[in-house]
Length: 352
Image (cartoon, rainbow, N blue to C red; front, side):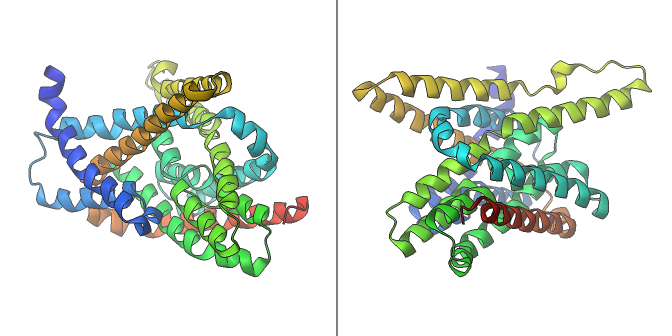
């Protein structure tokens, strides 16, 4: 009861922003390339201008942007069948590992060169190389990023998602990519799942491949999603080392428990549960299990939309615009570097 009294109004407000955003994208297919999370952030920012006093909703907004965001990542695990990824996704592993490494290295270099805030740089680097908004959702609690840093990263990722979805099918045509080559290119060089789907679907339509490229690109993308695990653990280790250094001078201990991303373990457990059940079950039972996992996956996506609505409400739009130049430059550099590495490795491996 105390929880609802403290957080109920804020959670309800986030829901009332998120649900129309979610519904709008489902009703208007063309908006899928933008995605409900981005629409929810924008709607939240607009609403924030009209709200003069947030004191009555601040608790629920904070809970939504932090805890519900973590719950979303955990539930995301139920959408990962490790068996399917193992059969198809592993063939793309060299390209995936190379693009992820490239993005993280570029993010570090640009962070130092442009003096971008460290947490913003980390979120953009991770979002660019893994899976856009979902990766940012996973990394944000690990590095203790605030709402404005998350909004900045999501905005940058969104910009290059849209560009990629619009130009990559044509670029693939010009370069003479095969169906497999474009599927791998879209799955490794486009940030967010919605934009991967848009780009691959366009290719399927142009080439009459009956969804084969979309299926392959999606599996490659899901394989990339697994990188959330090692990258989150790496970020937790870096944060712990940094805090140890800071606390040493103050004589305070650093607790691994406070830094370690426990929710990532639940994400792994959810993936394992999905894999085991779908491997063991057959017939109607398998069909029912897939329906349940499909519902949970959709719920995880809606939780992300709710969290983005909360983040938008807590974001200073003026500050976001004023500080946007350097993060956009970072996002552009990561995006171009990933695309070049993906294409170069395909050429070297004979996939092109």
